[in-house]
Length: 174
Image (cartoon, one colour):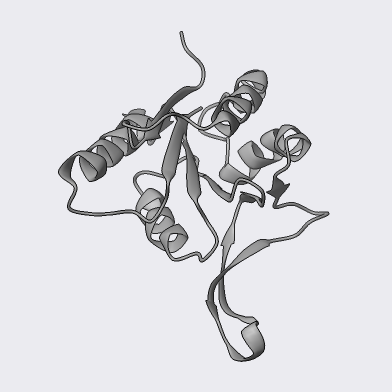
């Protein structure tokens, strides 16, 4: 089985070199990213990925760095007036990263991520991580968050009705 699953959009451009480095970090941490009975949170997944992402140049939210705030609007004297928090950012490649877990799809986190990150001033690329599969509830309902998010991005890019401001979007399923 391929791990992690991933798709890059739009599908008609060459995939940037940074994508393989990013995917390798996720692949190298496969065992630590496997959820046990739905207990893996997005913060836990980010903590697992933090060392590898830091090694390849990402600033990653955490105890030593704190929250990663990116500018949306600037105010007087050019200071950021409105900022949004992201999970990680690569300043050279201008890549924003958002990692979701658990009910990331059911709670519409992917929609919030798309809108909020689209407003960030200095972002060229977006990375969204979703669980491949999440089981919840008394009936052990299975949610395939990555598949649902992939269908969403397929529709966004195929329809042409909603233009995203990114040069590209990497969606990965862990």
